[in-house]
Length: 220
Length: 252
Image 1 (cartoon, each protein chain N blue to C red):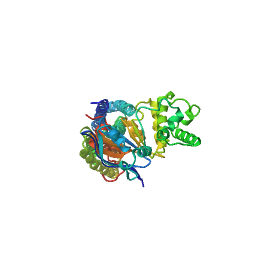
Image 2: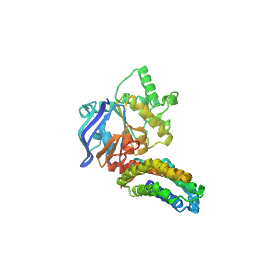
Image 3: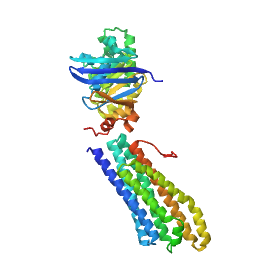
Image 4: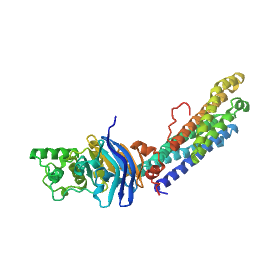
């Protein structure tokens, strides 16, 4: 294995570690919401620094690889893709932190009937699932799996579209829970963004493996 | 539309029984820079030397197929005429050590017995040295020996010597491998200027140089032309796995 291959392997491991960390942040953000666990929410907020640290490290490593090892062809596409995946992962990290901060600012747990009425658990599971699918696609260089993410993102979009109506209905019947309902809507919006970021990541995986640019194309 | 200046048709080259260039078909457009790359022994230099009939100067060497210059078979032309139209610059700068800078530039005329009036010679020397961005540096020392110049200047002098013969095509065999990075960069800049008037075919081991200077790249492997495409395409998404393995350094 030459030096470039070694560096690319190390870069891939670092990205996978960041992916695992971000995925765990999102899972913990969900658990902190369902169990109203403020300690866990605090942990998510604190660990966001590690996500940011990983992002900076990966950016620096990409810069060094460009400057010192001048990658070309599939290697060039890999480093370009990693740069963009890195920034998408960091944004998903921000989303987990944002949700955790909501939990910290709330005084009472979310009502189970609110969570049920808005399909928020389902949305959480789907967004965490999508993120894990993109990770598996990246690790195993599986563009078929990367393409499946596009379909799953559409499902998240559908829940998001229905959310306004559902929340409006809930507020009408439970006006005392307006604060919680608005927080729920904000979380749904954030989880929908996880789907978008994962879709972007999938596009980068396909770009790196197949040299096809899917960005800004309506159908994949 | 791009017009083809050099074309090879089923070109094969041999050293005795050793078949070193295998059935190469390539079309080289006018006023382009073409990089030819590949591992040592892949036949790239032999192919280059076939273009201006230098291959046949080696004992035991033979070639089949055609090399066309502006659609005319170079094998049907006088070899001296071919080499006037297709100049060549080598790996190591090789100015004639005993000739002045001035005489080095017009050496091609002298060696071919072409007599020119003094003012015509002066004009050719100034124009040729200007084209290789050397005129300003040497205009006050034209009578000095070419060997007094730095390596990079000597190589530009050799390019001026080739340019002085008003060729259409210039062949370069690893033209910067003996130069320091600054001189390399000057010569590379020169390629961009030269392609306005000439077609450049450059054999290089330096892949980054191929990427920087050429419009198209040809990749040779064990005598075959594996891939020939736009340089941007070759370095971002090559079609052939052998090209990819070579440019990414995964060649075994």
